[in-house]
Amino acid sequence: MGVTPLIWIITIAVTIAFFVFEFFVHVRKPHEPTIGESARWSAFYIGLALLFGVGIGVFSGWTYGGEYFAGYLTEKALSIDNLFVFLIIMTGFAVPKKYQQKVLMIGIVIALIMRGGFIAVGAALIENFSWIFYLFGALLLFLAYKQAFSHGDSDPANGKFMQFVRRILPVSEEYNGDKMTVRKDGKRFVTPMLLVIIAIGFIDLVFAVDSIPAIYGLTKEAYIVFTANAFALMGLRQLYFLIGGLLERLVYLAQGLAVILAFIGVKLVFHALHVNEVPFINGGEPLLWVPEIPIWFSLLFIAATVAVATWLSLRKTRNDAQKADRTTFDDEKVIHAPED
Image (cartoon, rainbow, N blue to C red; front, side, top):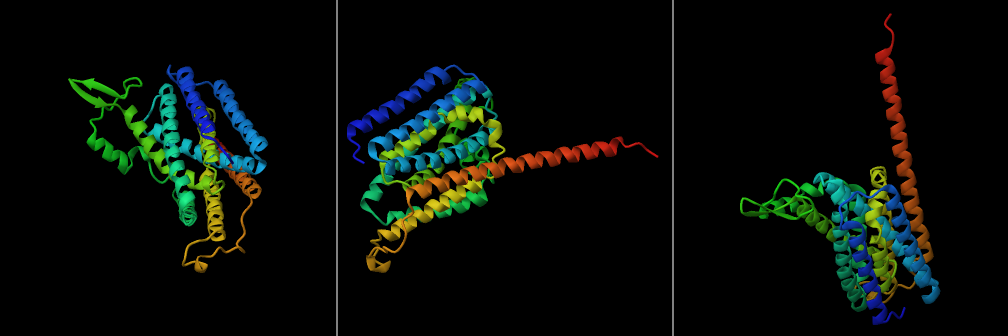
């Protein structure tokens, strides 16, 4: 793709500038964003991401453009799953609405830093060890299984990791504005705000484990991996407030993401077999008869899976609501029925 160090520096500088702008314009003064504010900024960041993808297609070729859009769509879907877990964490810690922006902002920055580290490590591994595709593929298939059958089974706010944190840190049970520590009777305590941020940072680390192998299954270009992740995370804070109620209605999101992760896992295994150098597989020779899944098919498959999962989720929650309304109506008829 031919990305120069200067382009990398400019890209990282612009990304940092966007998050600094976000903090000083939106997050510094605690408030709960309106639907209008969230919608405008969500549309801005999504539009910016799409425009950047078009720029990659025009200047670097549409093969890379397709890889970017497939990666962006995958990372956006995984980021929405992040939001679902963020919602569980903030509900578990009872974070006041006006302070949730700050928590989200810090969580998103931590996620970008975590993913940046994984991107660098992943790029080095892919460059030097072709067998890593087998490992990434197997990991994604395992994560797909967990995503499909274990989603939502635990409470991150009260998990083993947070129980360990509470044992080693003196914790105040009350919020003190958006401060992370407070002094009481001459002793320093951490507030629940710091615990929330620690929990979100831990969850970000877990999500980076499936996020980065997934996008490396769609492109080998570290620049595309980084920019797709950065744009997927930009505007995520606004999206949280825009679709907060919708998150609970996406009941099949986990299954949809499991299908996507499994598909990319299979794609990675196919690619690993196609470029095989592992001695105990086919004598270390590539299996050229194994098909390579083209990027256009990956993009269509991922988009269709997200669309179907969303449609099925909304249909199920709508039908469940209608059944609940009918049950309530029938119960009221029985209660108010005239006696003989």
